[in-house]
Length: 356
View (cartoon, rainbow, N blue to C red):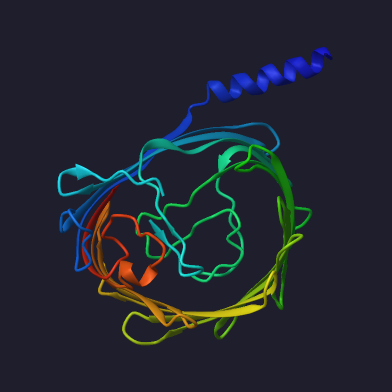
């Protein structure tokens, strides 16, 4: 290997390892919840204890170059009374009645290294990949699980190599390679354009299926956005479209209103159509309080998912009171619902979140 290349690699490695710039941060949460839809032989009180601890280190190189590293570890445990609930898979999906939950004693949450300069960013490892303007009904959530009702803000990561190129301040190109669930690599790309007419994006991703996505957002007197995706395989053809609109009314400290509508049209293997809607209202009260309401509607099955939260946020912690009204577990039959209280029936929850 060329001596100059070896010298450069050793220099970069030493600069990174002995960097003085690092951070240690995280969050811890604890919640207690009760419900009117209690599984047989389970407690009427359910609690959750979790944390995300993040260590980051970075080193500035010459010519505005940067190399940084991040490792984060997550613990997320659910208790029924004083007993641990052992469930592998409860993410209640508005779409297709999917029931899944991750109850992990501990696992890596982020684990990546990144190089960047003024034009290029390259990141390798367990990382977050998100795009698209949708807030609740996100048909471009190909690699994320963003949920506005999750106060801890958890977003699952993927094992990937991602490259971003910024030829100008208004254009960017992405490409990625992801290690998927069957331990094979899948590839994709994205392009974004910022213009006076709005923010435009196009994306493509192929694994066992081909995914093509288009998105647009405009911010003016009001906010307007759309997401469209086409899912193709030998046996599947599906078109998903989301339209969204938001506006802040001059009431109090500002009443934020948002609505989204999603249409799913299945062409293969059989023709079908499903429609969903979502409404969000949020208003700060005084300096530290905030009230939020989220309603999601499965129009075809006439199922409503309702979420009301009062939050009080201080310097390093927040206290949250949450009431939700959702379908009961019997409404998901013949699917077997997991033995947890959260997201089933009428629930009341108090959650404490500490940030450090």
